[in-house]
Amino acid sequence: MSAGRRQSLALVNMDSGEVVTPRPRTPHNFDGKGYTLESYGSETPLYAMGLTGAQWAILDWIREHGGASAPVRVKPAEVAPEVNLTEGTVKVSLAGLVEHNLLLKTSPRSAAYQLTPRRYWEGSGSSQVTACRRLDPPSVQPAAQAKAPKKSKPRRASGES
Image (tube, rainbow, N blue to C red; front, top):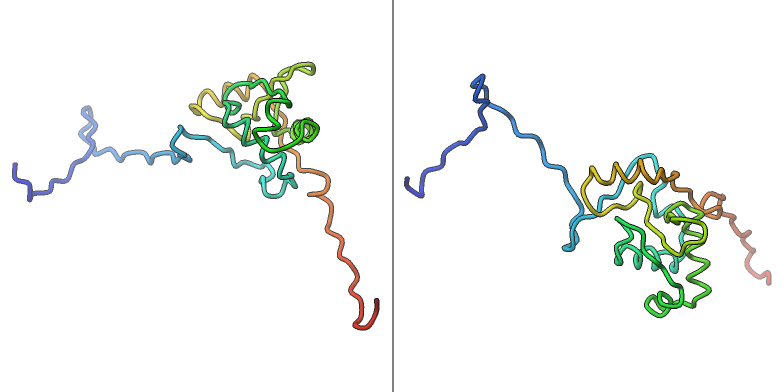
């Protein structure tokens, strides 16, 4: 076969002889380490959650340590220096993320957390569905300050102090 020729290839159903159209591929976010499925349902978008920088840092730390597919033991004393926060800020951030339902705590007394499979998941889609059924995570809730209307400051006339 010469290199200059192009041939049209088609998938054919061997029983009926009909040409089969291929299904479109499912796009995934790929960051080089595997893919992370992020659900885009009726949930609140993350930019509207009103999260602090510390909470974003904790979310990222937990995701980097495998918390998108399984619970991760989080010790504030070990996490704090890695994300340049104090131990108290880590504890407050964890509590806030659990309150917003972005993190699931495996039990009330446990120090293990997992990112909610409704929002983050690393692995196959079928295992995400299984995790959602098993964990039964609540829907993500925005912070109170994110829901509240913004107050505008009254403008002063020129010359007033």
